[in-house]
Image (tube, rainbow, N blue to C red):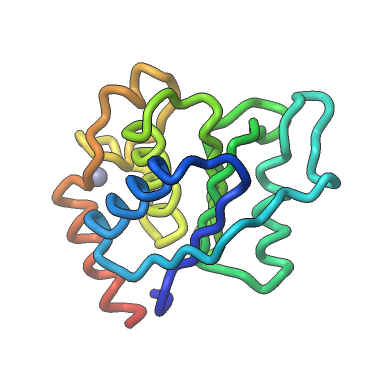
Length: 163
Ligand SMILES: [Zn+2]
């Protein structure tokens, strides 16, 4: 487990959203999250086929700057294989989440927790749990904002393993 987990923001992410997201991350994971400021996506990661940034390319950009255990919240559309997505994460590396398709800070916080959970070593869960994979907007609205008991136990083990 990292000593702290870094958070980057793209431009135009309102304080109201960033503060809400950070509060929820602290509540759910109980580790130190640190906002390290503004980071703009590289134009080379723009995918004109989907009119979005390539999510995988942006996460690899972070890692090629030797930044791991990080989350990047941006206000531009992102895609994987030209398919629009809420977010994308690589375990133990980093995650990127786009605010563009989510109407409220509550929905943004749920997807941030899900993708940060993947970075921290959690996996998709089928219980009534924030780690449900969001394959539809309805599912995103319905799923809770917190971990189920099995994911909580799994996360405690991950913390012990790495600390
Ligand atoms: Zn779960």
